[in-house]
Length: 422
Image (cartoon, rainbow, N blue to C red; front, side, top):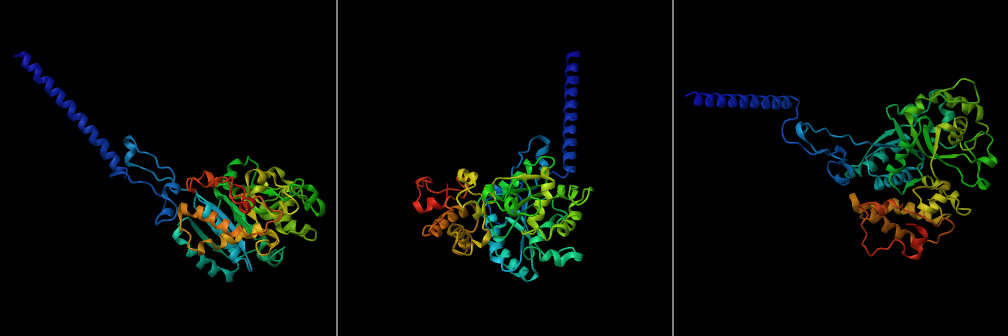
């Protein structure tokens, strides 16, 4: 009898323990439900990709695989935007749109455009950019041209109309941490992501990045003609300028006007007053003066990130472009619109026209189509000094770049090989 009684007590004890375990699991489940994570986990897709455009596999970013209690509480990782600014005045609408198109075609992360333009251009920009809304890879904001009211006339006539607007971007775009400023005559031949990555290479003192004005001092402008201080041996070119604007707003700059260090908003007008009779290239000269006194604040990137006719018109003097290709093309001197440098003009015309001729609307089809279009645009051009070109090795590495295996990049037609260095 005692044996049976022990068995009954043991069974009751086991049942009681099982009941306690069941209640504990129920309590855990209720706690997870209160945290708002009930139901099935859903895939995280960045909102800028909704409705088409770039492949969601390429743009949505990594999604964590849920495990344990986290499987019902998946957090969506925000996608970093790259901020690109441009200033457009006068007859610069078409040139600016072509630049923006080149940025969209090659870039991977989403883009935020900050477009500063004269009032009469706003409606044209809006109409053109809204027609690209199917891409879903960019947003844009239009701004009026604005200068400090007490000196607006003086700033507006400096060098070219509106050109000095770039100096005030850190003060206008107060909520933007980092920004890539480019002139309207820039063409991206490589993803904006790549030059954006230079921000991570800045040391603790660097606030901006630009390329040298010249690599060869014998043909340099600043070291031969400048009547004001300039950065380094040959100065810097401000047509492509990467900025950590948070640091720029905080920094106190050394200068040759006073022993007191001045912040960005306080140093611009005194610099202009002191040197306005000595400067030729306007805002670029002011930047050279500023960084000549604060050289530790500038990161210098290679000439292939700001490749201009000066790098090849008197013979090739950009070694990095010779070795790796051209990553950003800068068509200053109006070379996109005359016949002085046919290769520059051919690339510009190819990018300007190629969405007009039935090209694929989005995704990986864009890049192969563009290269084929460039081939057609350049095959009949007579090329002069500027003969080594590149749509960057990045295109060969990209999973989107899917020309047939029979395509041999090393043995293209002679005219194309002269134009694009793959």
